[in-house]
Length: 181
Image (cartoon, rainbow, N blue to C red; front, side, top):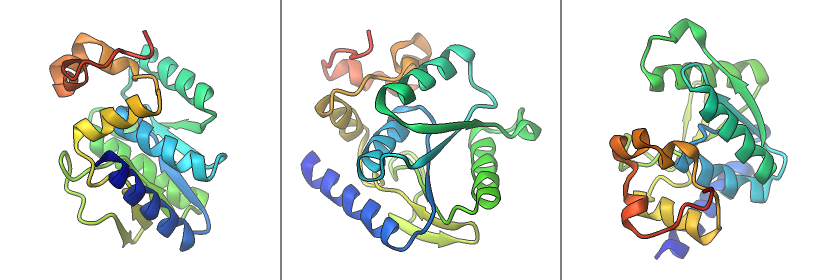
C-alpha cells in the first residue's frame, strides 16, 4: 500500500516539475516536510528549500541543520518576524509567499496532507504560483512508514515530551526505533 502512495507522490512531483521552471520545497523540519524534501531531492538533488524559523527553539533549528547536512538538502532559514505572535501557519505561509515572490519561484512543494489540513488537490495554482502536495493522501502512519523504509532519522521534536503531547506519539506506538537516538 505504501509503495502505491509513494508512486503517486512521485507522479505528483514529476507533474509539477514538468510545468515549473523554478520550484522550491517548503521544509519545516517536521516529519511530513522531511518526507517531501527527501522525495523531491532524489529527483532534483540541489533544489532550494526554505525553512520558516521565527518561532522555533534553537535546539530544533540545530537538529534541522543537522538533518539538512546529513541528507544534502539546500536549505535557507527565513522568518517573518512581523508575525512573531501570530499563528504558526500564518507565519509559515507569509514567509513562504514572500520567499516565492522575491525569488521568482513558480512552484512550492509542501508536506501538507489532507488528514491534518485542508488541501484541496495534489496540485493547484494560486496567485503566488503552483502548489504541489505530493503526500496529500498519506496518513500519519504512511509518513512514519516512509521514514522507516528509507532509514531516515526522526526529527528531534518527535523524540520529546512536547512531540508526544502534540499527537506525534503513534511512531512510538508502532514499535519503530528512533533512528536518531
